[in-house]
Length: 316
Ligand SMILES: [Zn+2]
Image (cartoon, rainbow, N blue to C red):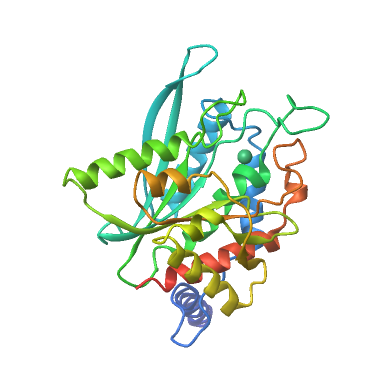
């Protein structure tokens, strides 16, 4: 009696161990693990539960802590890039901080995947309540949620190219119509350009991609016009949309539509990083109180995540 339960237990334990190994290290020829849209959607909801997250707010600090913890747990190296601005109305100092998540820091040649993680202080396009509550589910949380789910795949990313996720603060610290925007990406691009020019650079970005407003229920990502008109950035666009076509992801429309002033502009114009904007700019709830999780869909996040993951895996 003493031996039998022991060997059964041992057999079970051995089976469990085999099971764990099989889950962690897929055999050759097996399907690689897939990006999960539903998981990304849960991240989007968790971020929105923090409430409005404009630059300098307590909710933004809580979000930063949540993200740093998440990406560290996934194996990334997380660092903050802090700077300050003066609020143009009150003159008070506002703390701003980009968050940089580095995967495979030993790889000198790198790509940057960025998303802004601040939310607009007010839903100023809302027809009823332009000073109402704005949680930025699509405009703010969606790009972040895709990065949170992509993190799971980064430690095993093959090839010689490293990846940095950069969460930009103050993409839209816009309280009055003429306030400047893209402050975090502008700061980041200046630092990067100074490092490159000063011979202090430890790495170089071959390309960048900004993910913004990628969760719309009726997702249609047309090619953004700056991204295709800059000759060095056009190949980045072509390669992403080629992956989408090959994977049958029809949400990526291989034709140009809008011109958008987003974080890719300072990255390319100041940082000289060929950076493409992946954005659905036809979101009916843009900058309104209705930009909530209810108007976002896991299928949309899944479509973007699937394309980005394959694109990263094909970097050679
Ligand atoms: Zn916005």
